[in-house]
Image 1 (cartoon, rainbow, N blue to C red):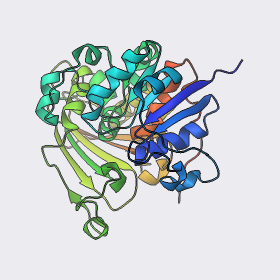
Image 2: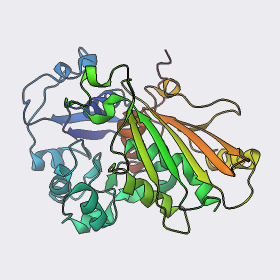
Image 3: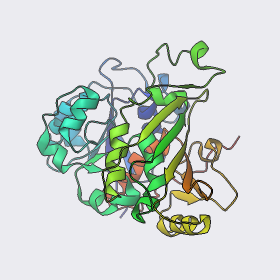
Length: 351
């Protein structure tokens, strides 16, 4: 008998909500129950996500926490940072069998004081924060399988953590030497228009933003430290790039001892040999965002600059898929004991 998962998305009008809906429509084990938007009740879903015209005959509904919790096996929360703090516990407590995947940052940071420092919100749901599992399947598969609450990782952190974990696990990296330089498509800022993402402001240009102050910094440091024998502090600079989607991260780190490119490459091929969504590219080929567009893959390449004794790692992901909705589906599959690849193996658009 085929497992059927009843899934709902809270806050389904945004880019991530749209990608979640698109992926779940094609998932062979999912029935979509509710797609919520309090400000767009009764509006056909395809009005916000035109690609679903003629494919999904549903309208947005207002959020009824008890209703969505009782009717769903899993609820995906695609609401802004801060909003999930109160929403997630209410859903979990309304039905002891329902599972939640939160796409915000509200349950990613394990230390509530650090969360408050970076997000200017007091975290008062310590019980659920302690139960949340950081949803990076390549490193937390077993914990994801057993939890009711997954904190879906951020897009920049996903690209950085997957890129650096094998070197940290080897004990090869000086903890105070890591520089993360990332370029993101404009969709990473969400659907709401701002001056920074207004077409004349971002087209035909590339710019750094939130220099030394981006909110994903503590999330990256937390997970780097989990793979290291010391507290890791990084220099992280994100850039806005005139493309719709994709993240390319180039990461530089000083090595503790001698490590050749061949040895480093071997660490990566071994670490990800059984991880279906991480592709360590063949030697001489470097990741590009167009190679992963519309897919749940993370492409990685590594080299060692023996002249400076630094490793350089480059990763590419689609910020809306492996950096968001696709990773959420991967986590959902694991939580319900499905093959983690289910519903995620469609090929991307190369050109």
